Length: 200
Image (cartoon, rainbow, N blue to C red; front, side, top):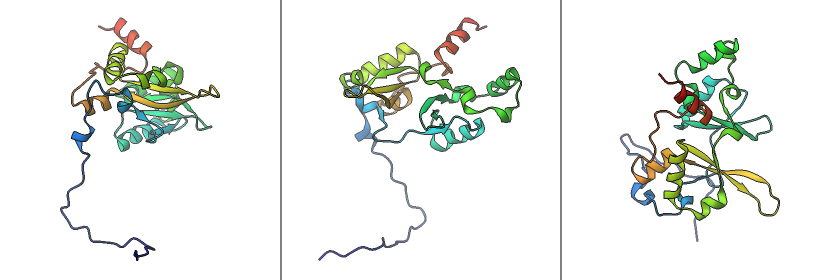
């Protein structure tokens, strides 16, 4: 007869215990594996989000706490309104924005610095399902952009949702080599073009 558990018994954790690490060999993939293997699937993992109306200092802390360089931005209805990445809040950019807008640094909210959803590169989930990892790498390199959202359309209702995201940092980690090394991750494709045109 099995022992009936009502509470989980405690044990003693002694000093100096090592921490379990992911099995990198098991996680390692190749460029010819299905592209879905490198997609962060939001039906499997929760995306890291932040509310549009909070201050950028809180957003910076959220990125640091989760070890990410982008956050999905939610509106008051908890829908995704855009994406904020680390590049947009680096260095003097927030202060320069505040000066241009005639506001104080403390008045800068995430929605003022984010990319609107329609400005973020996105791909169709059906194409991802038919693709290989090397196709994802080629797409990211051609975009010259470190991530792309994956949009899924319900075949019956036609409704769309963000199914996941493809990021160069995750793909680089599981491949064991860098697949994309931009000079910087611009706030939008238009920002990158503008900076290239006005460089020097």
